[in-house]
Length: 238
Image (cartoon, rainbow, N blue to C red; front, side, top):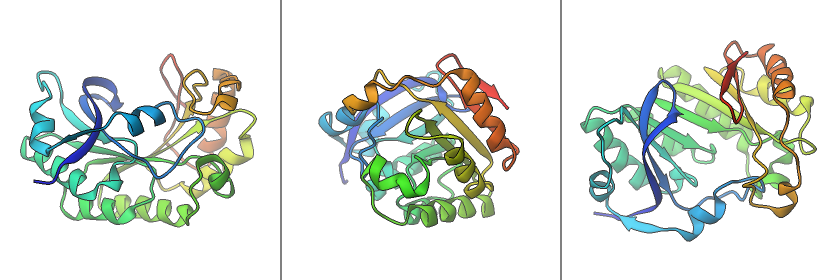
């Protein structure tokens, strides 16, 4: 059995799978290097090799109602993500995948095999800023749209989410993103956490106020029916 590169396991989360308590499996490595990332060093330096069975044996499922496979970028380990999803489904758990959208074929395989119920897709920024902010140089817009369409066509819930970073983004960025991902089931605008940012320059950027996030949520609402704002205190439906 192929080993999975794991960076960590959270046995009980109340925020990673909407309306469900979940166990979260963080797979290591990422093909982006987002300057605001809060766990880049953790996912690259803390790597444990485990089989899918060992991962599940390491989790106390007393309260978990769902499984979240996150990262890093979990689709960099396609065999691992399939094995984990199969095990979760065999035990009756719904499965959520967190992804940056760079590997739509992996998401497609999960959908084809009925191994995913919820996809959370990080839309990092306006598409012409991707290389500067994430160091990823690829046709990300096309890949994101492909994943949204696949999910909608197959009744898999698709959430798109953007972490709003003042000075790096403005309302035009949110408007362009919202126009592009308008077919998603849910769009979330998240409060930037400067304290845990990977890049020292980003630590100097102050988080946006809740009032500002609500204003941006109302802009997104022009294009998407279901919009929420996520702050350090909780979630606000727009």
